[in-house]
Length: 107
Length: 242
Image 1 (cartoon, each protein chain N blue to C red):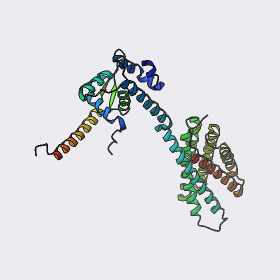
Image 2: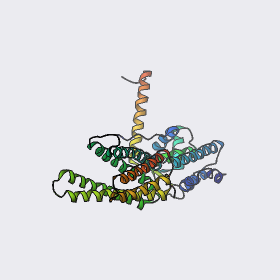
Image 3: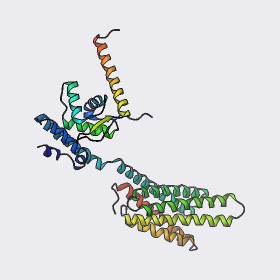
Image 4: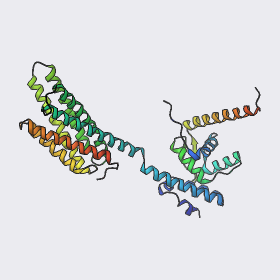
């Protein structure tokens, strides 16, 4: 039986953004916030960041590393990477379908 | 301001994330958006930790063993009583195999009940609780060996009878240990635990020559003790306390 995919409720979007931010290497909280803001054009608050980060850590999708000057970096686990790839593939399929419906893709 | 906002989070959360969270807040000036976001995050952490305390997997597991144990105790007690009533011929003659089967299934159900309820109580008195399970399980195995020997062997039937008696006695000793653990834990009815303990001891005594009527009476009291404990276990949904 396949494991049930983790559910993050209203923190699903922040969780996806955090996983994406960590996909190119470990980052501490503030670096993740900057990365997300740069990528989406919208700021992510510290409260939202940690609410999502706690859930990701509990689900084993990210893991904490040793803190440096009180800043604790987090990195993607193997399960986290696989979960992220699955979510991105789903979004990509969804986007392609939408574009096809709009007639904006080549046959 | 920063420390005030962090203090809105639960102590357990602060112990794990407080330092790194504060380091982030130091990095940039706090605007109204940040303050509102942190307060919502603190509310989320408070609700999550509170909800988790109430329904952890651990607690759910114990509640499940309590319920399974309770239902098994009720079933086992009912089958045991029916077997005794049929066995002594109160409701007319029946095939001897019928009370025998009811006794076997009832005993199995009581073994499940003993294991389930002991798993629940073992948090408070682990050695006593699991000793009760071990002695009863060992007694049941020995009794089965004895019964198989009596039914299947032509020779040494007296020897197998003694083996079966030893096994059955051990199961009542195990039930007595369970009753003591239940009484001391006080998570279930102490009255029922007392009844079960006294009935177990009296059944052992009655089994050594007091005749079928006292044995029947003590066995029904034994079943009644299990029945009441089963009802309590199904109704009571709370953790054990010392």
